Image 1: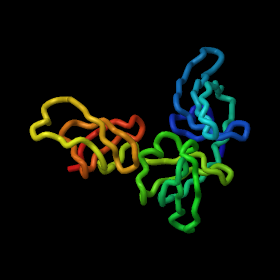
Image 2 (image 1 turned 120 degrees about the vertical axis):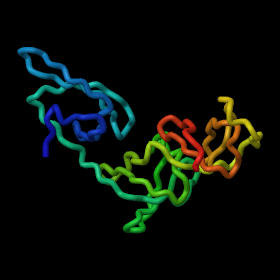
Image 3 (image 1 turned 60 degrees about the vertical axis):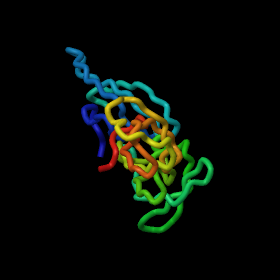
Length: 187
């Protein structure tokens, strides 16, 4: 299968010069007699760099040969995360630097989809919001639901999140994994 220039929507994985990229921005420009040009921003999935490229209608783009495997986080060891494949029970140790900021919101025993390129882990797919338990915060006062004041709280993964004053230790909160922002308390 080969992509045409109009197939390059946001989130599409492509391969250029042996390197996998994810399309992060897409703009279609009509050039009159010259034909249409697609301008895209693509993120290198090996080193995280972002570049801009233009593709004409005659260009053929290869899809990236990225495989996914459902893996469960067993434990953290320093800056590394140790995952177990849910089907083969093989373990894979991956640096948090490779997985990016979203890895801070993966709790122990959580199953995520790791992406592999040529047998090497290049990232993870996880929901844009997850529920995490508060492990440490100052006690909230009754009636503190009307103000927009925030206080720091530590979640089970060790990340600090700013939460409303009524949140207490033991509460489960929904956190945006892209921004790290508090969304809501679990009902």
